[in-house]
Image 1: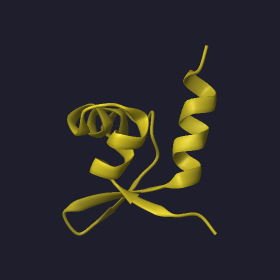
Image 2 (image 1 turned 135 degrees about the horizontal axis):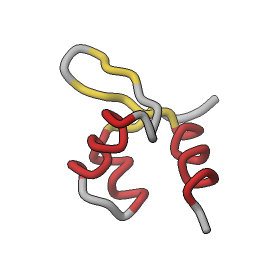
Image 3 (image 1 turned 30 degrees about the vertical axis):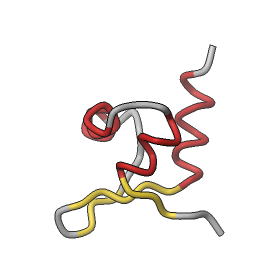
Length: 55
């Protein structure tokens, strides 16, 4: 089972600013679910994002 992360936790994990993570979510580059007013990101979505955008 994968862990569910907040935008802030994902930003810390990716070494990015939370606004950058939100930008990736809104552009469709990073999958997330909106629950109420906040986004939640599955750990495997971050792994997929890194695999697609790594050089």
